[in-house]
Length: 226
Image 1: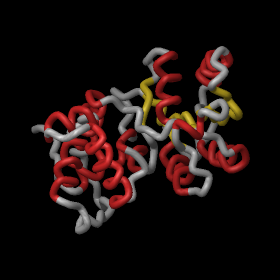
Image 2: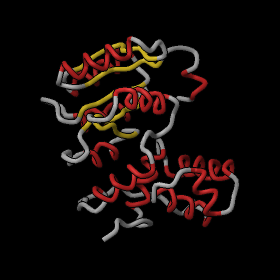
Image 3: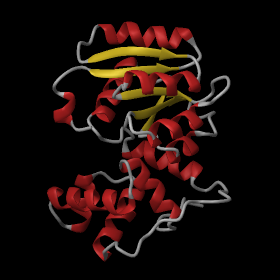
Image 4: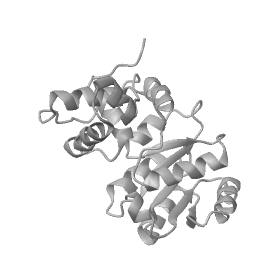
């Protein structure tokens, strides 16, 4: 979904969290923002999947630890479906061991539960506009932590069609750099950097920038510091 597509109406949001207090707090907060509309709430992953199929929201704010189907499985089902809802994981970074798995399942980023409510709303808007919400500094922390963990069966990625320049761009994306930082490093325009990233999305079948970061690690182009 593009920014132009969301400009025609409010961003439709489903809140998926087994804690009613969190859902209630977010719903009340969003009520004061006409560009955001909570269209449904779910207390389990299975309920979230069902609501997405019924309501076709733009964004799902997804907790990971829920009874029954957890947020990781639910995220995989939602992002693999035809509804094209985008998922933002809502978790506690320092404690949750499953954030990396959720991103690989198709989530467009993650929110930290102790971040400001206004920050959460801003992140929802960013994801609804088709971008990944993770800032470069947070991306580095996340990927450095989880990419180093053993993965018995990483997905294969076709890389034959990537040009040398696109490979350079992918490395820099994997290091958490923004388009402007990539442009400065490679001495190219920001528009050219964006074009390279867009081609990487297509060639590597990545939903967004977060998945490009993960792919860079899976391909061995970027390694976490030792």
